[in-house]
Length: 291
Ligand code: R1P
Image (cartoon, rainbow, N blue to C red; front, side):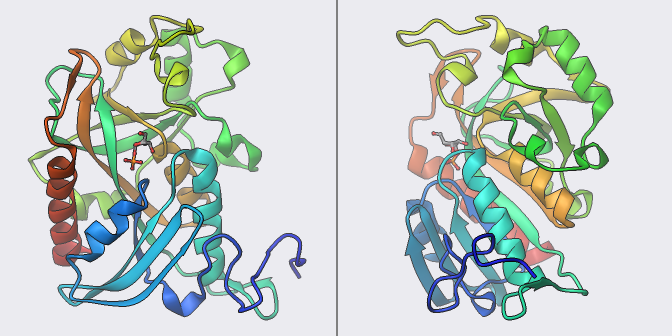
């Protein structure tokens, strides 16, 4: 039995941070960073059956072209992903009455609709990237056992060597996307590659304002890193954590990002709202058609 301090429920029986009960969540879940993006996505829904918000975790559940979907905001960063994925998994795979893991597990689909910075000149602002892998520079997954079962040691070692990675920043981890889900979402208009997930926006992504960074050449090294057929396409702050926890828990995850900044040529999208809207329409239609 999982004790009250470990699996915390609110007085109404909902799970602690997300404020959700099992019946309020669909098995296909769209994850976004920005809480205002939730209503922008659900404005496309046919119906909305449930809405709730606690802190940065805003959730709408409804249907889009007849398909039941949940959209939830995670806020920024891998630490929040730890909360969101664990609590969503618990809603399906732990009996909240008996506080025991269920014998029959439900596999969920997690699809991130995010914004991101491109690491390649030929991946321009306003284009879409699907992450073949999440490359975690954030350390979150190292709190769990058996991560070697879901991580790609060979690519990690190549990356550590290529970047001369500073061990004080922890070991980068690499997890592939959910292949079944990827096949349902990828089209020829979407770039595919390795997405770097950073534990911060400025120093950890090589942005210098007033503080010098530990490795001023890191972004060039990311730009140049290739392994087999994959190169690093983009940088953001959630994908590796979503991929790692999803794989460990038996779920399928795919991260789709619209590029709003290009870090190699210093450009930024002219209209972020429009760029995100384009991704929303593309992603929702792919889900409705294929997932
Ligand atoms: C940083 O501005 C935030 O934007 C990106 C990063 O991953 C980070 O969360 O994604 P979202 O637009 O989904 O929040």
